Image (cartoon, rainbow, N blue to C red; front, side, top):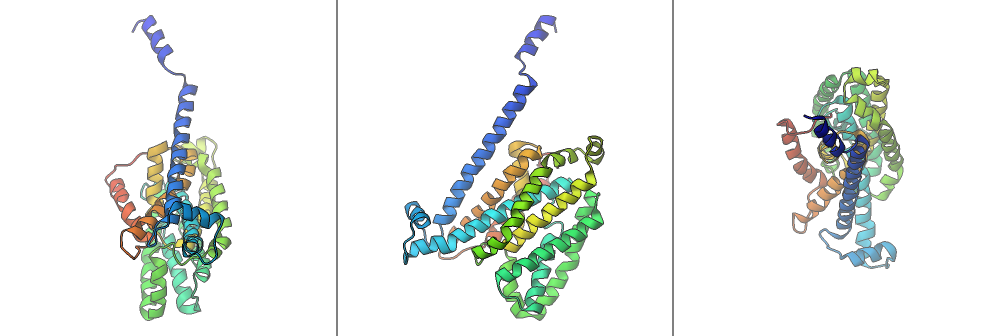
Length: 349
């Protein structure tokens, strides 16, 4: 290539700063688009169901409720609580899945893979069968404690070894599941209560449950945001991250704390909902790339989109009845798991 042609090519090539700015604008637009979709899903969650309510009535119920109006009571007493819980649990699951995949560098990792759901389930079974706990507000602390105990066990044994973390999580799940089954078979009443919680649902949980747990979600989200840049370096490998001045052990420890807070709260609020924490991070990577500074905020939006969307779909697929959000979310997430298993995913985990 002649010197003149090289000069023309160099002049035509946009400077690096312009490319970075263009990518940042594209990613910001993607997050804004996701927020717009979330707004539509929230509106659908408030308006659609066994009893469809028009948007004007929904707005009136939120701003100027009329005592005794059945539609207003449905919106305020039933749909607002499940929508708020879906927002909190969805964001927590999406970010928790992102952290787990980032720390383990495992594309099929999610909180369930690390045994967190099984730990929460065992704690709830013990609470119901042995301690007589009978309300969702009573379950939440046991579910949270069970998630934390399972996470501490898994991270303490598999610390610093991404593959080992997944293996330890699978082992913990394999050990706990028969214990849960044994207790439930001996106590039919506990089984009847447990199965409603274990299927994963946004119904039957009042705002009082969210009122005591929302600070854990906020702290977990803030901690995840602070770790986003570190996760991007960790994706390059432990040696590279250490060479760049990162304390890898500290990063994994802080990520474990954030996962405990987020996954524990989500499981306590909505039950052990599967595959949201798996599917959402992969969707975020396809939309904004592998930089966790963009992945984390986007998963905080896409998580509620998927969970609330699953809840709305569950209300509509069966006439005069509902499918639980956990069932629909699993049906949505299963194709993602198949695609990941076939290798159709992006790098950066």
